[in-house]
Length: 197
Image (cartoon, rainbow, N blue to C red):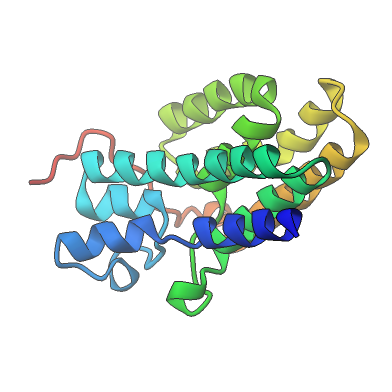
């Protein structure tokens, strides 16, 4: 019973649409502007850096908390399942008719809870790719592809490696339209110098 509670709680926590809520605070339905995605990148672009960073931190945080709660009330492999539920909740949130973000920030959060050493390696890679190219999607795709082999190289058990593989595939799949735009040179770049009121 406690394991089931942990998984349901993780899904509901992951479903909290912080990007959408941030938009409402500013009088904007984030689903109707920019890329129309409720994730932190679209918030960053359309509502400005401070709100975008705050939404990213909250999305990462809900992933971490989901794993911490699962570990506190259940044993392995339930924290892994709860982590997957949190990502699923973010991508398919019950509150927004199952149309959510792409799972990168919350995926980072659950990774912090499950494989922190891997995160310490991959976050600088993500930042570097974005700083050089200004493509958030490219940084996310590269890190997603590298995630599973890095989990394996760091010696985590096969259930964690399998989980990482599922998350990697899911994140890349959610970025399939970005991949097409990248190939055709049509992907939006992140304007790091842009300021909004």
